[in-house]
Image (cartoon, rainbow, N blue to C red; front, side, top):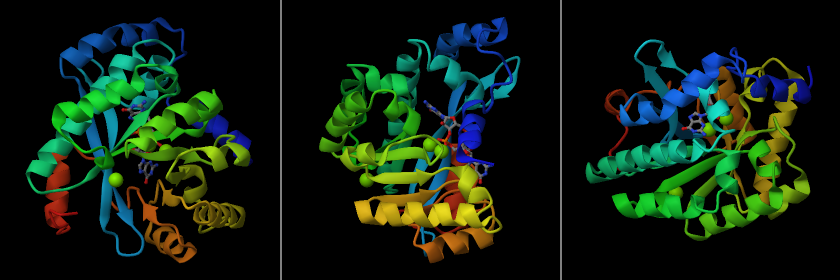
Length: 282
Ligand code: C2E
Ligand code: MG
Ligand code: MG
Ligand code: MG
């Protein structure tokens, strides 16, 4: 099936509840309380270099430990929050928790870059850059330790605006990634002018690349595009060894996926580091 179908698949991911359902509205109203109550927690998923599988950084992925509903994945509440002003306090909250964790790891001698997902609406918010700088200053973490992941659709919602905001973030030394690359519609002319550093190839292409010839060709093309534009390429959703090996052969720089490590709470991630003997300086 076509990339277009897949991009729809990404859009409806986790949206078993209709956007206007009372259920969803109820969840949204509950979100501010959940932040204060500490119900929103971050799990962490490593990104490793190819070849060699050295940890390059960790991505923060949000989960809601709801007292009645159990664990709610971000696909259920983030897209709805993204369409309301609550996305600003939500993103600030995630940034704060993520950068605080980065500071704790640094204090323990573990110099990890942390990646945070940001929404289209954050890029349209005049205060977003200041919010980011404020959080880095609060925890005394250098901008070079922070990565921000933005989807193609967030950028294409207002490419000129995205270029301006991403430019200001890049200028202070933050690493910028285009998430789910290939699932949206970034025109190559925009891509050329965007101040981004990484392309994260959408999981839908990675999933079948060892069996589907066109998926393998797409990955090969994105890796080549990245190389020609001076961008790091990252493959997300790597679930088996054959895929990891093939990505390495194709020259993809970084991999992430269940094969390497599932997203884990910070304490479990530290045990994973110990088990896999990741040096503290990683
Ligand atoms: P994403 O940023 O593209 O994150 C990758 C998603 O793929 C995560 O789902 C991750 O758990 C999952 N994943 C990782 N490796 C594998 C694998 O090998 N196989 C499979 N099948 N899946 C894998 P998750 O945590 O449910 O997050 C879904 C999306 O929600 C994220 O996609 C991101 O767009 C959004 N999101 C998560 N946390 C935040 C946040 O703090 N803020 C915002 N704005 N969005 C967030
Ligand atoms: Mg991401
Ligand atoms: Mg860095
Ligand atoms: Mg992604």
